[in-house]
Image (tube, rainbow, N blue to C red; front, side, top):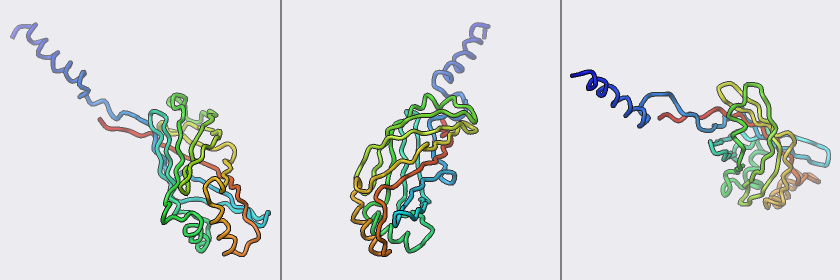
Amino acid sequence: MNRRQLLTSLFVPVLFFVLTGSVASGPILDGWNLVEEDSNLHFVSIKKSAIVEVHTFNQLKGTLNGKGELLVTIGLDSVNTNISIRNKRLRKYFFETVDFPTATISGRINVELLKDLGVGEKIIQPAKLVLALHGKEKKIKSTFEVIGLVNGGIQVNSITPIVVSLKDFDLLQGLEKLKSLANLSSIASMVPVTINFEFERAAIDH
């Protein structure tokens, strides 16, 4: 085999691997996955016009893909008010989880601003989201603080509470049922919600 034949025999296989992407180069980063144990969504109830209580959900799942499409799913059966009987009443009479087991938050985020966000760096980003709850959908606007974390992760925090009107989601009847069961004179129908979501960078093996 002469020198030209030897070079050709070495070059062609290398070129094939480069063009087909067969050379191992590690995972491709594509979007983010919600870290459930480090994320929370809180909502506030106000009863008798003066008693304020903060509640949460224990089950959150979510993704933010490389195109900026956000989807977070809230397991309504996981509602946690720190009072067992109240949790049961919320599931049965308010959220009606037999028919509506989940709620979702969806929308689009400008991910180009996030890809090079350094650890501890912060940006403020407005977002138009859609809340789907109890068979209804409502557009909501909010502004979020996004903080860069290690390994390309991000923390997303609502700067101000998102105020949800129960009327928009046909939840007033359920609210009246809760008032009756608890013998309360009033429970506010406007509910402040705060978001603190942590996302880790998602990797796709290739």
